[in-house]
Length: 387
Image 1: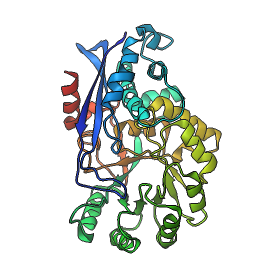
Image 2: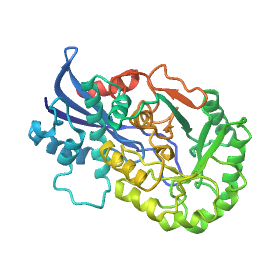
Image 3: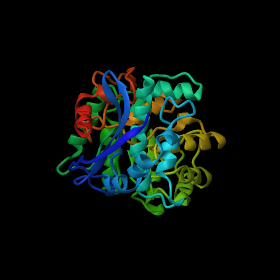
């Protein structure tokens, strides 16, 4: 048993939308196929992966550093103790060979993309959905029912309050109970008007989350916090720079409601610093670490262990990214849910065909691996890379 090839293609996911910090007009991602020599139904088992939106494709790092290290490793050195499957931890260690600690940058995204494909292959070789494989390894019972929220509300040329309201109503009509919109890309007064236009739509039991994408300095973050306190929001997300832990801690003094951050922290060490120094409150705040951006599931499991050691429930984790990998982690390990992009970044966002949102939740289908084969538009792209 061995990995015989790792293929990468940079794919466009461009859109004319913008958040408070960047526009997505030139956004790309890396699509990866990990080809094994294991044969199922007359075909080699192939694992697929891609990185989340917002960090661009990682083709150079994948092709020049990380894929060659895996392919050059002795095949037996990448197998589990029984020799019956690939060991993702050993593949991760091979990728990290000759890498210094710290300064995680873009390499965490490149490794996370390959790691996703490795786990997809491992679960397929085992003949199980990844979420059930993870639950078995953790000694817990998988729950295929997962909370999801609809992320959108971007700034868009010519999109006024009516367009924003129509978008959010569309999410509610599809079964979502929590919707998210962007703030910080317009003056505070304008953002409050946008927020109120959405709040007027929400029926009882539904909530709005807002996301500043790290735009604010402390003074502006506090000004928004004081203005947002009047609303019963699901959360106030990423007010300032993700590595400014003091800003996050001081902001908690001015905002009693739930806050969320973590999607731009790319290692267990950075996540631990947030927990140590960021003033996050385990009784109400949310953690958004995204395995596809932060060295993959191997590292994400270390992050989850760190959270447990520090008294945090894994139910406080709702990952960024809107991809099926995090859905599997949520279902298998009991996270609080997952982000969803119903209309954006296709075909990489969304769920397998036939999966519907009901009362803010989806039910995971029993598809081998991550379940990419169940999403017809996505698997078409993936197979074109592997063929």
